[in-house]
Length: 172
Image (cartoon, rainbow, N blue to C red; front, side):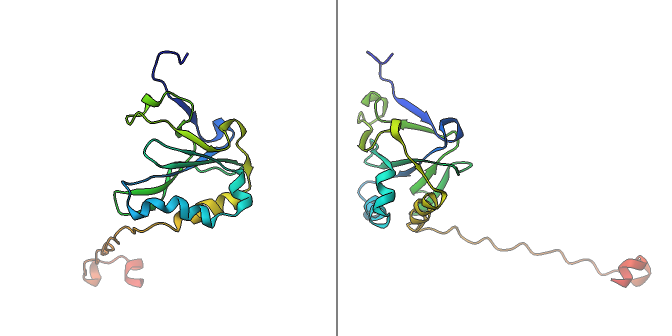
């Protein structure tokens, strides 16, 4: 199927793949924030780290995969540098993950996805507590908070003469 054509390999995350999820760490042109994957690595227990499947992406990013009985409902941004730049996101529930093994020219850079630890054929199950650890540590890298929108003012009721009020309005 793959001979002579530039095809990638994709896996659907979520229930369809036995609750596969992934964290996606983007690298943004060598910004100091781009090394958050290494900082993330230092904050995760060694026992949990050994359970994860890890691979690099063509833009020098990283993906971490696992399975857990609890799975997210949708893709979720966990950390941002600013309004437009995403640092870490959770990919789950029917999200298509491009994975190692496809032709490098599938990606616009011509570079491949490469396994660094483990393989998707042997993804391990983690506990909901371990999953929460991965998400919490990822969220700790968030550097942007959306601006607070001013609260809408409630419309003040018009003052009406007492003879226009119903008995219960007059009582209130």
